[in-house]
Length: 421
Image 1: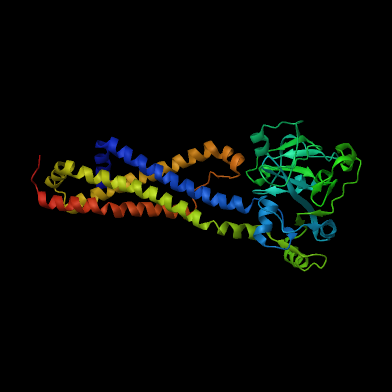
Image 2: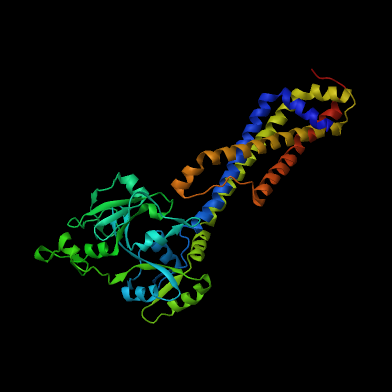
């Protein structure tokens, strides 16, 4: 205890250098813990990009391909699904709700998705959070109504009531515009931090209306074209969709229904569990995740090396101090222990300050990060993994302090009681 008080007094005499060292360690610790929090929450958020959905069903291809186009709006389906197949499973006794998805068009680089009102009622993300509207409402009976994701509305500057023209295909620049059938913005969704923010949502009837006068992938010309008013009077029943989402009455029935869908004789279908597919997709990005962790460790190591440099640099200036300690009865191992305790005190102070900075940063940015990126960063105590990291940092500091402690030990033996001015 006496040596620890002496170490604190010695650091107080060099307070400016000590504070800079503590700050460097604190910033590196804060960065390491922040990266770990973001990594773990990003994994959890990614795994819950879609939540509450038991099965995703599409044309038979690969599970990752189905996940990418149905949830992330990336890529295209290998084939469509007949409407009768969707109805068959939507009316299945084990199914609680079903959400159809129809893809194929875009607007200024953003994907357009046709769906039903059930999408706004049953689609959840994150920790079971439902979709909410920041303005307006869901589309209703008019097929030419569109609901915008938050990012679409913000990036393109759209407001309620604006009329927009959708384009055929998913390219950023399309040569074929559905300019004869404009849509009116009736709703804007609140930000979710998921692909929902980058999607324009229309009804299935609206998707059919866009292509009601198309034949073999080519729009009709002249008298063969059907106007928007004429389309409103038609029965716009889809013949095919891209995929659909299912929520079941009981989770226990998930695997049985999955097997039934995969063996469906009506057409080749594939049913996947979204959680399993999301984890499989995340595992493909494991290299980047580990690289981020290694960079954070290097930052911490840099902070500790800075502390080691500061202690080593001060050794020659402190030989008088060491000689005085020897003159009052301190042994060489006392001097060495003093250096170790100083390093431990600096690192402990840096760790505590780093934790404080982390919680201040989380408290200040929690709402923004959740609304903007869909990441919920809790103000929780460090977990077992984080405590292990902090313990490793303290142990690393003790190991690094062995070098200046050894040099001080050697110098105190060589100097004896001789004071070098």
